[in-house]
Image 1 (tube, protein in one colour):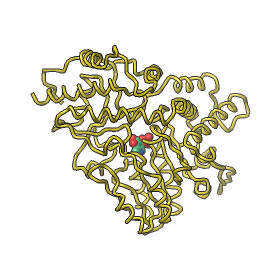
Image 2 (cartoon, helix red, strand yellow; image 1 turned 90 degrees about the vertical axis):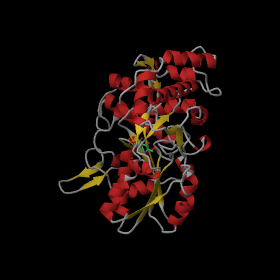
Image 3 (cartoon, rainbow, N blue to C red; image 1 turned 180 degrees about the vertical axis):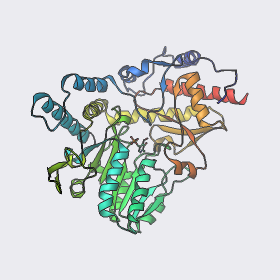
Image 4 (cartoon, helix red, strand yellow; image 1 turned 180 degrees about the horizontal axis):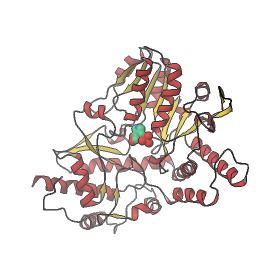
Length: 440
Ligand SMILES: Cc1ncc(COP(=O)(O)O)c(C=O)c1O
């Protein structure tokens, strides 16, 4: 990308304008009572600068930032309890095991799983989905069986089903997306008449922000005799999720999108399903007995957790869940709804900006957009270099959705508990400036 000479003004100027408008002396005004200033102070990275400007982090849909409490919990584990789990009979190994299993209980409570053994620790959402595709799919999907997924899926909830279909001879069908970024529920209803074995769909689109009415869709699938896997990578971090109330058969999510570390995620499953499923990977910890020719399997959840688990990461995951619970998931959702509503209003001020997806009331804190003929990658680079704003650009691991809207890529701003209206204002100013840079 080549930048023309008339650079945008510094972010100090932009922030100065905004400060004047908000009358907040550089403070980040809260959305209806949400303790935004306190929250922001918990995230050390938000104090840093990039390219000489304060970081404005608008890429939480890709990965969230981490609060002090999560960093401290992992640090404390390594400093005081570090040992392998489930094997040692000495004090620190027992402490490490207890901390790992306590984290599982916290994660299970967070999604209201009936029992903590229904929560399998995986590496991330992708691995959780692959686990189900290999283990449950391998045992249950036969040639000609139908799996329904949707046009708005992340590749993580598409490719594993393509692989399963290739291995098993199953068929795949897709619920299309409307121009407004919502699932075509009329076609979903029609597809269910073909008696699918499985429906795999996202709770919230990482591109359009659309929150799908999964409770009703699960009930419909069950009535048609199908099981349902929900990709909760974008929902669990941002809204209350109750897997029992939803009646999901499988529910998948990643810690790194919800204040926790990378390298750990979760698969929730109904107990009877998990118990009937064969192991996904073989190795230490997942066995009960091993002879040279045959092995038997450990109980849930360890049957699916071969090898040394991500112990510090699980503990960090538990700390993340504690942090979110203390704030309250309903309050977090409300805060993000207010931010996304404000952002959609403010983005109207940018000529030629096109937003994809539904109205603010039907979406979470994600906005994908294009700006005239400026390539989203160029837009993201300008925002980074000139305004310290981190947004994502590309196909967002949703190439079929890009094809649906006949675009190669979008820019995407995504929000979280630490996002403020000032962040949105800086984004808008940056976009207006980018337009100047490209068109004059
Ligand atoms: C909707 C959705 N599903 C799945 C994933 C994959 O998550 P992970 O990379 O943590 O496996 C993502 C990540 O962006 C996502 O947004």
